[in-house]
Length: 298
Image 1 (cartoon, rainbow, N blue to C red):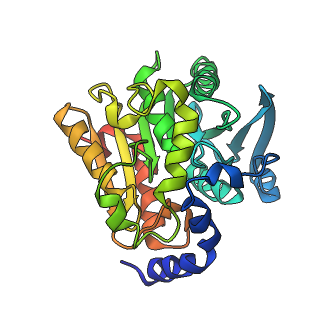
Image 2 (image 1 turned 45 degrees about the horizontal axis):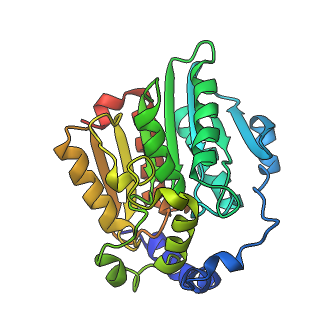
Image 3 (image 1 turned 90 degrees about the horizontal axis):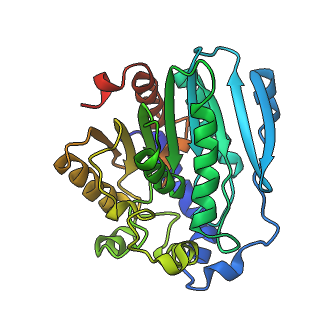
């Protein structure tokens, strides 16, 4: 446990107070800004590579090609946001470091969000972008990554894709949309940002009539034997921690190759704190996975 991680976690108790308050409300959806939009790429990325933006169904799709790029390496990134919030500036910290670690061109899909849009539209948009990326000429390695809610939809994508990703990377993924694990209540006393009531309301709005137990939507109900080599990074101060442990156990029982990496003082999506040794080690491991999945996940 590094000092920088402990200090960052302590700072989050102050900085994330508005988020905790909002997510603690069952009527969390009423607090959403109807004009919310994805954060633009930082200006310095354009000095370090090529950034393009297209729009699909009103949602932006960003593509970042780093100047030092591994030919044929592609990575599709699905940002978190509780299924209701778009990409935020901190996501670009993760995206930049993923590109740096892997040398891949990173396609960031800002998918349709609840409550305005439902799961069917989300999955259709993600699948279309993935199939388009998989069909690009010269693709030799194709990775999928996501954080939080983006991790949840990344699992489903990896399992249903016609061309299975070469590897899957999950940062603090939301792996049971129902959030009914009794451990969540205990762990919330240590989590500086997440609270279950608001997240559960978001999940209910997103799944609609399909329900929280739908095996195409909820990773906790998905059969995992077909998972590609998967890295999961999870902090012990995250209310999702115990569901990540359960997911890893299910994957092992199914014969899937999955490695769970934990950080004792890690909070939700702790890899975003790129200045910490824990985050640096995480990105180093992702880089190794991109080059040789079988050597990192067995």
